[in-house]
Amino acid sequence: TILPGITRDSVITLLRDKGMTVSERKLPIQEVLDAHTNRTLKEVFGTGTAAIIASVGELGFADGDRVIGEGTVGPLARQLFDEIVAIQRGTAEDRFGWTDLLETDH
Image (cartoon, rainbow, N blue to C red; front, top):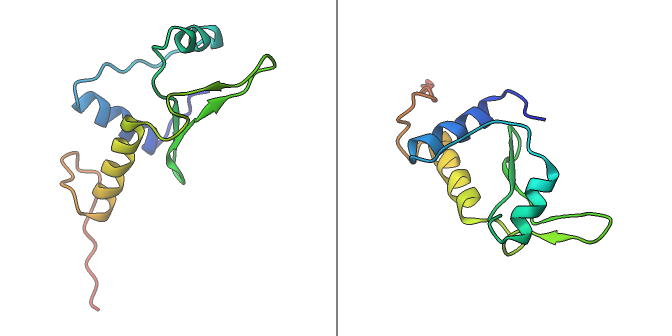
């Protein structure tokens, strides 16, 4: 299920900013299996507030597990995670206006 959320929207914005095509649609599991078999499935990850990016290293099925990529965090997931965290921490430019600077008297 695709739920609305700030993190999901942020990832989509970053991907589009990188010139990638993003589509949101129901994805039949057979399409995922076919892409795995054809070796065109490179990465699988989810997004969420607490995790930001959660990579999927393998998918389990009754007939056996399917390892995704190297079974570790993929390069795109790592890049997106690092970029979002850098924007949150103020170590990267926030070119989307997502953050506000809070000043304290301390």
